[in-house]
Length: 185
Image (tube, rainbow, N blue to C red):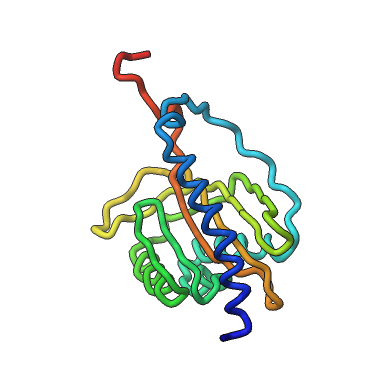
């Protein structure tokens, strides 16, 4: 057995149930009926420099349309799901998808950070969230998407080499209530 296999199994057994529980809470029908006011972004917490560098690599990836920068901090077996449900497993597969995605984006694209939150699940496992605003994203057919707000959610594990992304999820953030009563209430 590879020396890191035990750590990966232990970390996965911790991280995956947390990610599953988080997803179930978000998908709850009861939660979908609660009006959600638009909130102002929270100020960025003081992140340890290595975690700030992970977010800076993503910001650089978008600014330069660089798949190399995008996957720089992924674990070899990290996974990725973007807002439209496109899922990739392994750094190589994520790189291939982002190379395709960035090839369709033009100079009009931009993205900026509007908020950051970090939760330490253990000393070596974190849940890191980054809220973003962007404009100019192009669909595969070349048509433009409207301006978007979104949230990138990462679960990262600290190793001797630094922080590595195990799980990446991106969700769109919609203004106003997430549930509209058909009766108008």
